[in-house]
Image 1 (tube, rainbow, N blue to C red):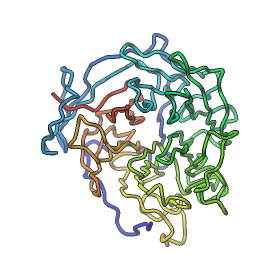
Image 2: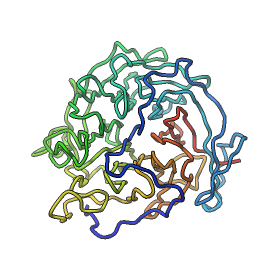
Image 3: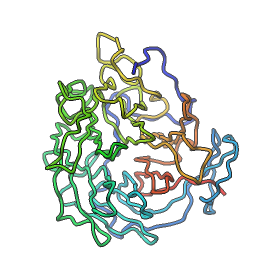
Image 4: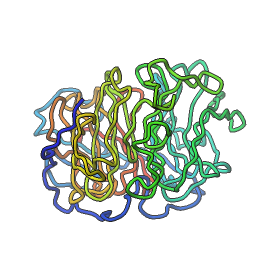
Amino acid sequence: MKRRTGAVLLAAALAGGACGGQGAAPSTAATSAPTSTAATSGPTSTAATAATTAAPGASTTATTTAPSSTTTTPVPLDDLELTLTMVADGFSQPVFVTAPPGDERLFVVDQPGVVWVIDEGDPEVFLDIRNRVVFGGEQGLLGLAFAPDFASSGRLYVNFVGSGPETRVSEFVASGGAADPGSERLVLSVDQPAPNHNGGMIGFGPDGLLWIGMGDGGGSNDRFGNAQDPSTLLGAMLRIDPAGDPYTIPASNPGGVFAPEVVAIGLRNPWRFSFDDGTLWIGDVGQDAWEEIDAVDVATIAGSNFGWPRYEGATCYLTDDCAADDLVAPVFAYPHEEGCSVTGGYVYRGASLPELDGHYLFGDYCAGWIHGLPPGGDEPFELFSPGSVPGLTSFGVDSAGELYVTSAGGAVYRIDRAS
């Protein structure tokens, strides 16, 4: 896997898409301090609709009718009209939404330390660990992954910042419709030298192993020198089997000069990654100028180097030697004139929007747009225009493969076909 050293392909200019962030490490979860407690009245489910847009390039218009999510007859992609349907609101700082395999419920990660479950009615508390989560800025409860055998074992894993500060990946066990806070088993702990760049995403890959995205330790310009150091767990993608005591190291990890848990290095702050048909997709938040999307084959990732801080995007950065033959090239990068903090997403595999099958959807926290990257393509197109999702903190997917987004304003939306 080689890094292109020439010009990187850019997204089409987005009117009104520029935002701040130059000169400082951009935030992934929030650019302003979020509220310090979960909503006291509790979030509520709703069928309200947020915004509709034609793909690609149409302007946003208001709509008041709930869209249909069951249409499966494809239309030309240029004629596809999408809408954001609000499914729940009133969360404090939602940063992820997911569901276990084969489970029709929806689970929302609220950054102060609560996992909510939506099962037809209003959201209910599924797990509350606010008393052990350090919350504020980019710190908090950041990730959730259900074990592949969750239906029988009840095992789930969360990624949060604890006192220290430290990243903690812990196992909990659920029964009777909720997870037991007293069942916590610490799987992995990583000291954090600064309060930002915590990564936070965890997920089970196609290999059945637990993958953990770790930022470079915070500050700016890889201040602590972690991202190019294979012996540290920071600035890296980790892969473990959490069924061990406390976990076991997969034989497929590179080993040697790499820390046992590390499978790849050179990441700044991987804010959301996902898997699709053996490919790992990563949205890695940039520094002063570029945001990047990476895609790599899970079967060949061991020992890979994504380049930070030698490169930011596809641009030579903190190095006197711009040779890049040993680095993984981003599949796409965009400049800070168009956004300032990438939010990685998913390849769409649902049934409601067959036009988008195989397209990778991603967005920007600052600009609030959503783009789609065609399968095998290198030029994204606009699905939702700037400002459509203010504070776009994350994408998520339900058990049917339909996509959702979370907003720092407290809402969760589903991406639907407009009526």
